[in-house]
Amino acid sequence: MAKQAKTMFFCGECGYESAKWLGKCPACGSWNTMVEAKNLGPLPGSPAILGPQARALPLGAVAAEGARRVSTGIGELDRVLGATASGEGGVVAGSTILLGGDPGIGKSTLLLQAAANLARTATVLYVTGEESAAQLKLRAQRLGVGGEMLLLAETDLDRIQEEVERVNPAFLIVDSIQTMYCPACAGATGSISQVREATSLLTRLAKCRGCAVFIVGHVTKEGAIAGPRLLEHMVDTVLYFEGERHGSLRLLRGVKNRFGSTDEIGVFEMRATGMEEVPDPSGLFLTGTHEPGCAVTCALEGTRPMLAEVQALISPSPFSNPRRMATGMDGNRLVLLLAVLEKKGGLKLYDKDVYTNVVGGLRLEDRSADLAIALCVASALSDLPLPAQSAVLGEISLTGQIRPANRLEKRLQECARLGFSQAILPPMDPLPAIPGIKFTFVSHIREAILLLRG
Image (cartoon, rainbow, N blue to C red):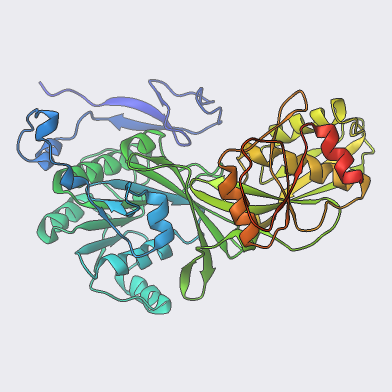
């Protein structure tokens, strides 16, 4: 006797499953997001994609050549996708890559440019569920890209699977996963069950046929990829395209990568001709001003040193609870640094509103930026600028002590390359020899504030 379908409820924000309807999702706390769907279990015929029955092999008998990398022709994209020990970066054959980002941020533009480069040496199938083939052609003409890529305007996954088996592409691009529909799965297009099954089918295609699959995913209002969190566990690589929609700068950041580091970022600039690489982005995050409330630091994004400017604004607060607002950095970290400045540095900030910002839309996660943030706040409070052409590096502890940053020599070389003549940092041994840079050592936050006051 056939097993009857069981009714389940899924959260439209995070994918939480429940046997009954709930007003509030227990996982993400969203209200009125539970939708009803039929849980049909495994789809009939799905294992057929895998081909012959798999057999266990000794580790030494497994060929590693199948995990080769292919360059996309876009250096910043290759950097984020990961690189081998020899420095060769790109897409790993048979991998599944999920690319998310806000609408209009440039996801389709970037993948269309990458597809044109890949089509010069391999077969590329671009499946679009949001645009017609004619619309995609117009975009390609606007971007000035050509190539012999294959276009398929289709949302039916059965038809897409048939076309993949017929064409046997080396690269498959699906734009977007929320428009794909599986006839054997219950639920409307874009529902939790449909998105999950579509991703599962595309992942099996990639592993079975050795075809690298790029999947475009929409994001929710919180910035996470729409659909259950299970999607990020199913794929090999998850990339996020970030940036202000009305600005020109775009950052490509990896949050998961089975074949490389997640610390690397790619920097792009949106132009009329598409996404242009910015291989030397340090200058983009500097304003060149020498005013109170500004400090320059050097952060490491993976293996790349990037100079960033931190700004602070201090104003008297008319309220009993002053505001602390941080843009481009962790707000909790800012509150911690302000507490250290008050307790260990002797600054009075309890009646001041503090606003901090990282220029250019860059987000600082590196703890070596602590000293720069603290000094720009002290500079704004005292209305005294830091020494001209100076870079600030160091991590601040709760006791007010300043610890050195890791890979300091690489950071200082980048500062010297961009014309900085002074570095404010904690004492260290041995001291790297960087021509053209004068070192000023501070071991405690009080010493750094005294340096600011002259």
